[in-house]
View 1 (cartoon, rainbow, N blue to C red):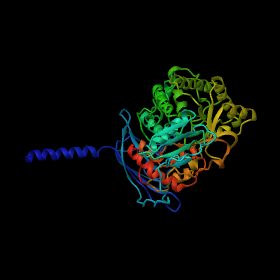
View 2: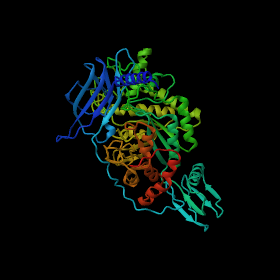
View 3: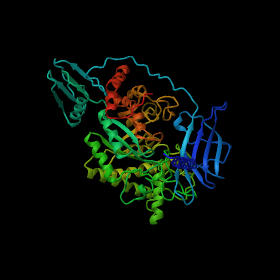
View 4: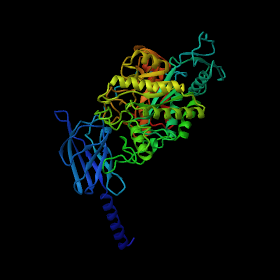
Length: 597
């Protein structure tokens, strides 16, 4: 290469480097914790255009500014900063210490009037802390050929006959493997035959002579997947269903509508997904005119909903694996996505018959996820007109797909104090529950909900609810007498809770930490009510990828799967040894991500 050519290349490299350095970017420095329990954090914004605005996402925390322009809280987890001058902007503020690195501010986006939104790179400078030492102590157990998860109730090795059980519970099966490794299956119905095949597929080859007899202790063995806060593609949902099937779980509780997104296409109400299933920055006047604000993952311009055909693909795929799907539309709180979408519908059409929030409502409240406008005005007849259409569409999708609809889950949790200002709160709850029951009874469907829907009702409303109720999810108490209960206690089954306090973990900790020992320790007999099953719940506010999904599921979800099939197995050493010997290699084979903690 000639000297001239080298000079030209050198200049081009300098120009390229200069251009890249001019791109707006962010640096965040974690501060040390002070005596008052706060930490002084620093945010540096590089190459800022004057008059622009920077948005970012962070779990809500009141900030005490020390230096730089003010940070403004918008709704939920969204914050913005108005940039007063060009160049470098430094902000210093007191905030809470990070329990984990994932809680740092994220998803920085530059907004300029008349220009496309620009995602900004960010560099983090965390306090260097050593990872926690593992605390899980296990005595090794010698894994036997028929040891799988969930564990089989009766096993006899060799060719000697085993006396069969006299009663066959639902899901019962019996497998006999002869000296030549040939297996024969006996089952009373399709579920049992399916579970027998799942067992055979998990047994190590070559098959050894043995007799196995097994059945589930609980009729409901569920997994709740939240796709409203961090959306999962159809293919990813199908992979979750495959995992469920391998663990003999039989119900996908599909959380598809919440404050952050409405994730199911409803014919005739296009704004539900065109507005409520899409995300963009608010306009310069802080109005959400074209889409909802970003969820906590900060993504904009992305589609976060399933078409009718995609939903049918999911429920058919699940049904072939003996898994029922129960869709959840969280109401009357947690309803911001539908409220905002129907406001957009009314702006387009002038039709107020689907209005979900009274424009004259002057309530002041702050929801658990920091929203101030997410509660339905349940005294509006239009609320029930809206859910009449939604329920009819869900029923149609299941009927045309040839897949049963066990229930529609209406949520019912966390209606914030201060909602329905000036009105009797108990009367409003009665009105809502009876309005939803009117729809369920008219359509011949059953309802499910979080335990909150069953509390504080008049005797006649409670009796009516029980007639149409499939179950309540008990998440925060010891249960309720007289109600069918699916156990989902946060302290044992919320998989979004971090494995430990290690700062490198992901997840929340408001109900403690949850690992595979914690899920295994769930004791259904300690709870009140008619316990019909157990459920693992994976909320997604801390998830950013499918790797995060599988990391939080595996291995802690296996404790819930075990407890759903076997009500009271107690040997954790055996349980964990089976995971290490049988489940971990299987995950590797299917390329599910499992990270050493």
